Structures are given as C-alpha cells and as structure tokens.
Image (tube, rainbow, N blue to C red):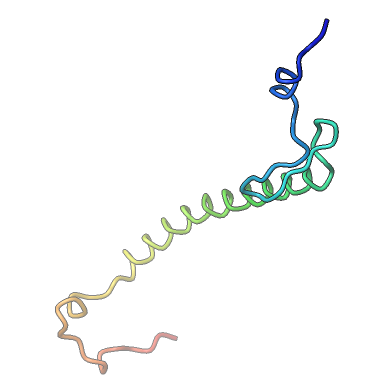
Amino acid sequence: MTVDRETLELFSAPDRMEIRLGTVEFTDGALARDTVEKAYDHMDFRHGVNVFLNAFQGAVVDVRRILRLYSPLRSFFDKTWRPSEIERVQ
C-alpha cells in the first residue's frame, strides 16, 4: 500500500509552529521537551489565575458585608459632614 505525499502531509505535524504561547517544536510528530514545559507552565498559570479569581469572589462578599455594617452616615452622602465629626477609634 502506498500513500501519496499530499495525504501524508495532511496527517503529519510540522517541525515547528507559531501559536499564542510562542514557537512550538515537534520531534518526529511529538512535542519537544521545552515545548511541553512551556505548555505545563501555561496551564499552571491559568489554574493559578482561576484560583485567585474564585477566591476574590469570596473576598468581595466579605467587603460588602463590612461596608454594610460600617457604612458612612447620611451626612456623608448629602455633603453636610464636617471634618470635626470624625472620631478616632482605638
């Protein structure tokens, strides 16, 4: 059985490609070692960003709760407060 060159090129991987992460290199159709490391580093970064964003949602809920408990008085919003009304908390 023979396969023509055009069909073979459709199923084979190039030696190098440019993608968003940079240059990706292949050795005999498999990813090169530094390319694999680059891909794992990118996945680690994405997981870290995901963890940060998920934790940040919980922090926002806590901030809203604090603002509700310690929110400014009406005089702040209608601009009638004076600096002398500020009390130091110990």
